[in-house]
Image 1 (cartoon, one colour):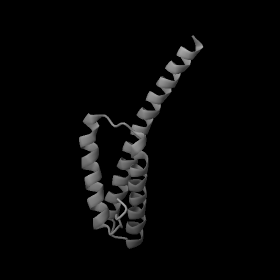
Image 2 (cartoon, helix red, strand yellow):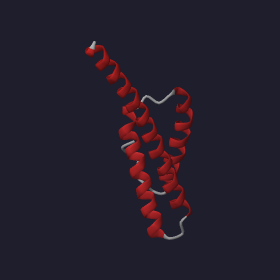
Image 3 (cartoon, one colour):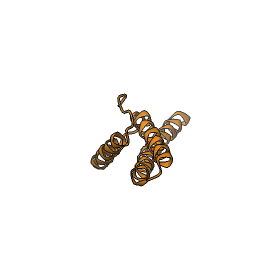
Amino acid sequence: MKRRTGEKRLAALHRRFLRNSEEFVSTELDVSITFASLALRSSDETRRLAFAKHALTGYESFFRFLPLTSLASQKNALIAQKVAWLKAALIELGQDLTDF
């Protein structure tokens, strides 16, 4: 009986981990888009570079943690659109994306 209870608990923890991982990568992507938007609008070169660096760091984190998720298919299209926008913005900001 304990074994079955332990398996159920483990399965529940795994589901919660996947859900939290999805939320994390989605939030990381949204924050990165915010930083990229701020960089694109900034007229101060120092701030522009700092915002662009933060956006790139988030972009890298997104791809590093993405394999830990199982994003629901209905979210995949939205995520793909956000990634495409962010990638274009980072390229416009002169960030090196050769590793991606």
